[in-house]
Each structure stands twice: as structure tokens, then as C-alpha cells.
Length: 115
Image (cartoon, rainbow, N blue to C red; front, side, top):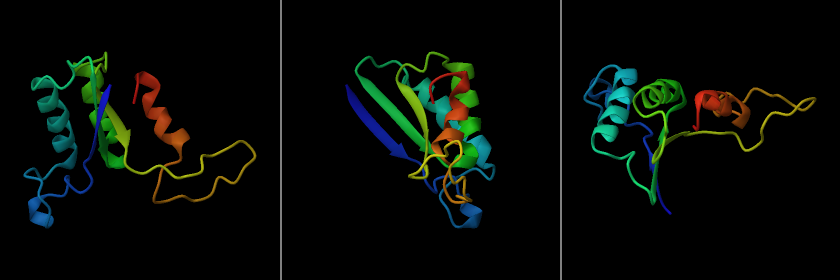
């Protein structure tokens, strides 16, 4: 199996704000990335996995589109850009990890299928 990891960090920043994204609406951009990838057949490989790492704020939007258009999640997968090195634990220090999701929170997005 061959894996391609694609970090989409800062690709969602619109041109009007100094970024490279041609769309002003970041959520719409995330939808378009997933839709176009599926149209190009990125979900049809048997021996390749493509994993897009979206900004946390866009992960659920991208996941909803992927679930709607390609529920099998065969070759195209999604991931979170930032996961804190320590997960939350019952009775442990929950903490205020404001810059990274704990893995348990990222995993909640996977309830409808593989994230």
C-alpha cells in the first residue's frame, strides 16, 4: 500500500486575506476539494491511500461531503491537522489544549465512518 499525506494547512486562507484560496468561504473550499478529488477518481484506488489533513474548523464539513458522495471511504481519507500528543483520560488532566484537539475529540468525527 502506498500512502499520500496531504497537509492543507493555510490553503483555506482567501486571497483577500493574503492567502491563496480563490474562494472567500473556507467551508465551501473544503467541500470543493473533496468533490473535485472524488470526480478525479481519488477514491477508486486499490493500492493507494490519500489522506487530506484539513484545518480542524473544516474537518467536519469535508467529512460530511465525503460521507455523502463516497460513503465507502475506499482510498480517500481525512485527518485532523493538529492532535495534542496526550489524549484525554478519565480522571486525568483534561487541560485547555486550545491549539490542538485531543485525539478523543477528533475521533468523535469518525462516528459516521472512518476519519
